[in-house]
Image 1 (cartoon, rainbow, N blue to C red):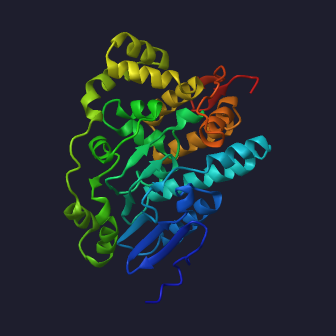
Image 2: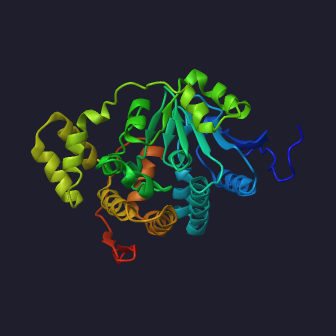
Image 3: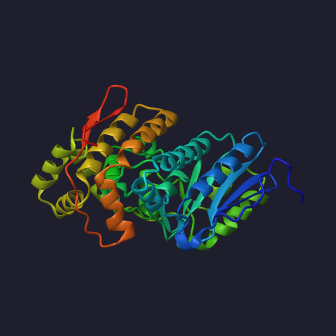
Amino acid sequence: MTEPATSPATTSIGVEARLDGAVGRILLDRPRSLNALTLAMVERLEEVLTAWADEPLRAIVIESSSDRAFCAGGDIRQVRENTLAGDLEASRRFFATEYRVNHLLGTSRAPVVALVDGACMGGGMGLSVHGDLCVVGDRLAMAMPETQIGFFPDVGATHALPRLAGEIGTYLGLTGARLDAADAVAVGLATHHVPSTQLAALADRIVTDPRPVAEVVAEAAVDPGPSSLLEHRADIDRIFASPSVDVVLAALWSDGSGWARETWDVLDGVSRQSLEITFDVLRRGAGLSLRECLDLELRATDLVVRSDDFIEGVRAVLVDKDRTPTWGRSQYRGLTAVGEIRWADEV
């Protein structure tokens, strides 16, 4: 069939988009890089979603061409290179565009369905958790691991994580813990589980089945089984309700259980600066709209990407891959009443 003139054409930059009947279909197609988002990709996503905003679509479906990853995050190595080259404006353009995409997904008139399997990290979360339905497969590994690279959970995570039950969002944001399908459904970051082998068929069924998309997805969904994360729900709620990172660490240390000691070890090994920023922006995000959270995150990136911990964390995890970062003293000095980050004078 001939596509309407308002349908953006397919591109070869890692994002393919087309209208399939009354369903907009987006395919992330940069498999060798696990669909890590580049500036060109987020610009294309913004163009597509903006063009479709006024179309009478039954749904927008986001898929991946890779069975290894939905999206492994943003191309954060390029952000580090921008900082080293003194090109901070390039990074701001990337984050600002990516966050506009997150907002478009979160405010779309058409139901947004993300079909998520394999790695879904960082920027991948921003493409999957703000829509109406997040359907996860058997191979799911979902996380916001930003504290491990001297960054903080962004792409609207400051809105999504605080709205999870109890203190699960605080725990996930600080530790970067990975969720399987059962965990993701149990905590509410995913809405349904469908076996990996049936995800492609589900996408086609959404196109051909005239029923509301939520009914089509619910019919295909199966029980993912019990969540191992929820075994520690009471401890998570008790310890991560603490008023500061210092108190969280002290509570973990004094708890004495194997889970608490393992969690303490994780937090002790990541950037303290990132922990402090993450803790505060998640607490602040609980009372903000998605747009306000994204604005807060954009202001924060301007400072964080210039910090020594960010440069060192990305080096250790993504560039040299030795995973032995040397963290510096935290330059973070808290949030102002209006959500501006206070930073040490020397940064």
